[in-house]
Image 1 (cartoon, each protein chain N blue to C red):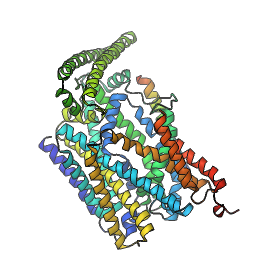
Image 2 (cartoon, helix red, strand yellow):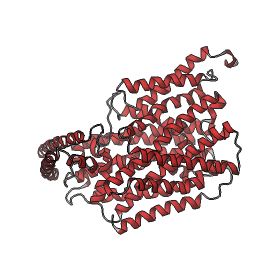
Image 3 (tube, one colour):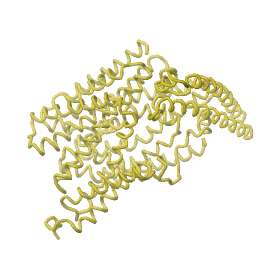
Image 4 (tube, each protein chain N blue to C red):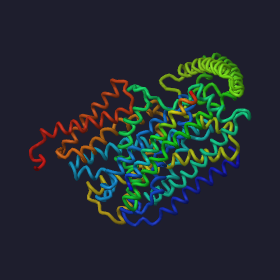
Length: 565
Length: 28
């Protein structure tokens, strides 16, 4: 990091915090603090929704995913526009009409208190843990690649977020989101332009795409139906729609964003804006990863992008073997670069037979270098037992630090911080709101007004502190971090099922939905433990199971809660 | 007017799907 990079980074972070503090001042009531004054315009809601969903790891990991696995991850988002339309038609008018502050209030009016508390508690547990990982994961990448202190990084991000989130509430979060999205968009756009510019002069964008496609990195659509495959057209459209319905319709971290809209129209337009820009946005970030992959066809990459586990190998008995593999890998990649050059030359010749031959040779050279890389990864796994060493999250930032010009490095690091801060602020704000509305206001009988602003600030501060403490502790969790990420996908389908039952299965009353949700959740956990079904399908299984079980249970529910004719 | 906007959102998704299919086929 040069002085210019530091200047860009500090200026960007100051801009975000001061902008959030300035725009968030003046919340006088609990409703103003939690609901953001309910005066937000559609574009602010849309940016805030995108920013909450975009964590730092989203755009650290996504280009790396394209580098390693190709672009099929974009299919994960195919359900999002459909969910945005369905929610605009159904729940947004309902939430506005009932003037709810959290999504879970509806469940008590429709069923009973314990069903409301079940949904609110599931949100608090899984989101409270996930927000810690949200700030831990990028802090770990920065600490490994830049040598920064992990603890200082977590403390810095957490403190900056709490400055404007605790004081200003939902309004401060939304306005800070708009500045964070500006920084993220500028950083990623300039990184993309610079990556295309840094390809060899004779390699056009069309050549680059053919090199990436020839090596299987532009596989955007997979039409094969396979329950065990994580990302294909069907899991994206069906499982993805159920997941996004639950995330945007029942997760308070997103519901709070559009409940701050000044009207049904503004809330709908904000959610639909997100539905329109998310898929193209993810496609462009994945394309950036594919271009980084092409860049490394003409420049030799490291055998493994994450230097942490490599140090473990070099300190053990396999150091000599690993060093020899690094030499083999460098030679294999040198040969691959020459073959890639030959493929580009063949493409310029225009002769189909020459192009096909050169493409086959490139695929063979790539397969040969991948064999060496896999041998290196096997040594890394041997030296780091019990962990799952992966360098996917490190590829993009390692590339930025080694290959992008001074100033732009600082902007990309600022984008990483912005992503970390945007998701943390949206989530601790929602955790604070749920604590106030569903626990303090409901169970303790707290009143709205100035006092509730302070209760909201204390709750947000406590959740921010918990997130930072959990992030500090996460370094010792190892592969349990994956378990925290999986935790969310186990609950989303069940929570969606409770809400769909509330809206559309009128004969279900009282605690029936509560017991149906508990039984369905056991089924989802059983699917996770005993089958290889991909996680996107858990959302479908959980939701359908709750609705079906609640309908069945309704025939034996206590007579006093039978629906009137 | 709302239904028209919903149709635009779903139409954009279907158009993107078509473009992605062409993209996958053209560069494979």
